[in-house]
Image (cartoon, one colour):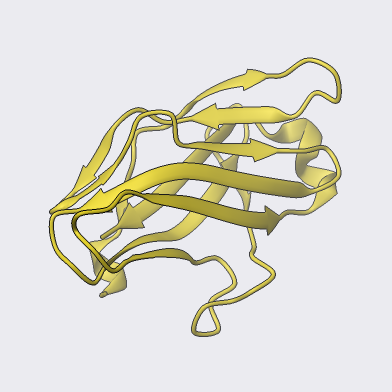
Length: 133
């Protein structure tokens, strides 16, 4: 996939959860070509600098892949603070997350784990995810 096909998804609505006060960013339905990411996909960010993604994806074609090219952390003025990073870089890219979808007849659970600099925690207000299929 050519990185020039990156398209910004709608910015997620954010809400602080109770207890340990993580940030939860949830998306509505996202369609890219023959691919769908269903409503409710979410990134959860924790104060210790870790993050998790949980979503469900499918494709109308066999052997497709949903790619999250990168996820930017933004402040209240929508300025980029940094990006989420994976522990398992794909093709040397520490910002990329991929869910392969071998069969068009199946839905796939897209799970990812990431990290970010803890010093950014108090400034995070928005999240922007760039993805394609």
